[in-house]
Image 1 (cartoon, rainbow, N blue to C red):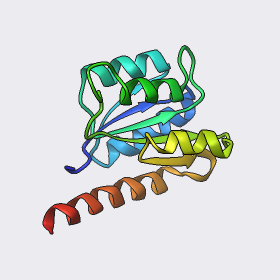
Image 2 (image 1 turned 45 degrees about the vertical axis):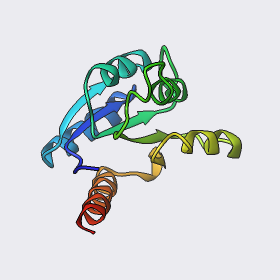
Image 3 (image 1 turned 180 degrees about the vertical axis):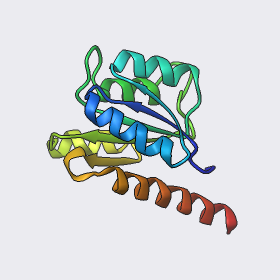
Image 4 (image 1 turned 60 degrees about the vertical axis):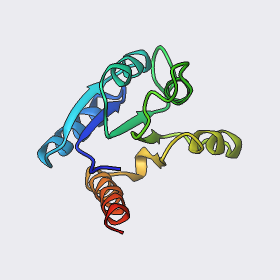
Length: 135
């Protein structure tokens, strides 16, 4: 996988969304932000992103529904090559978390993630990708 440059944030909480957008843009990422599951699915369907940050509790469609649609689209995987990190404030039961993690590349509890930690995680994902291509 290539370095992460473009990011789609699907997050309905204005404070969290604005905080992530500002932090990511200030660190050189191209960022789009939408606030509903339906908008998120639409955005990911028409534009290629390197990373999607996907909230679970969203209006119109849940993050779980969006992730399922993106990973299991009739035309194949809409987000092939795109990393997806699920963000939630709710601790899912083990079965739901396992099902979600099988389709996502990461699962983070929002209350534990500061913008700095998020930047570190994204940087680590890019470093792992670069190491894999250098071998």
